[in-house]
Length: 421
Image 1: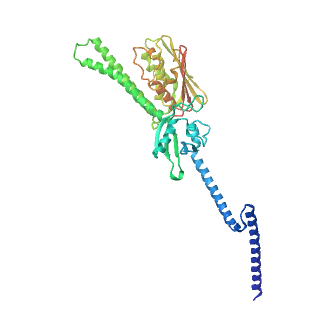
Image 2: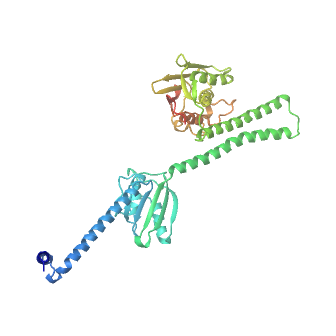
Image 3: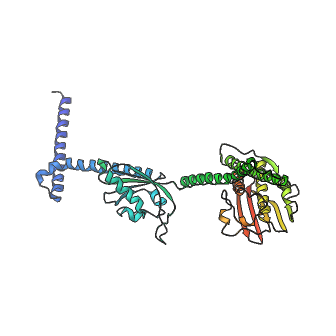
């Protein structure tokens, strides 16, 4: 045997001895640990394997916890409220958007669903879904909450979906709530618009049809005066129909995001003056004075001149029609700041009652109908709606203040330069 082989043999023997000593040391340690936790010494051999299993289980728990945290973070970013409930309708989990939708500070897991949503329509839907074991969807309008609860959602519309959990999820159900109030209001506005437009068109058409039947009756011939009166009435209501259609088309164009405004610089005082000239026939024989207060150059903004002509025409016409008493003064003014233009149309007429102020910009709404001159055709009820939408289309706002018998003021604020839609 060579010297090298002898050295290797000695080293191998030393390694074996060290390994055996280390095994003996760790075996004593495992036996000590086993005794400390109440295990028998002969079961100490199983302890390392069990320790590995515990370690793996701990790692799996951490992994699942991290996955759950990520999943819950994602659920907190959606706009819908999501709830998991037990079979007895106690909340197992709820995401944060649900609290926002229900105007609550937080949703408490473990409490009953009715305690948190406070509307039996939702709990009834979940129970129905559990009983029928099927997906159920319904649109509901929230009922009034108790006074002082601070969570009154009366009038809000929600789309609610519920379905039983799968076999792996255990007994219970999931519930999803989405706020669709804006869509419901838009749908109602559309229905009201169609109904009101139909009514407004039907009235003049009925009058025109009646006069046509009278003229076609073939009875006693009409006198020239009666014939002229009949034709005048038909002409007046024909113009009213045309005006309603023009106003409806104007609103349609303003609300069509695909139809951009034709924005270019124009003289604001000239636009207001043109509107006054257009309404000159209405001022004949009337004690009405128009005043204009603008900078020397008339003031300029960037906008669609066509719609600004309509804005001033509708505001001036509204003041003239609603104030038949003499001594009416209408003042149109414009003031330019660094970042906005403030335009005002004021009059000293009868004013608008406080209870009418929230509704004057609604389509087809006409307040103070008894003040209008009986000899004039009624307005379409769309003029102020067009004004509001046209100002907003230019990135501006409009406000109305009125003290009956003293002053009524429409104030329009438009950014400079104008932010046209």
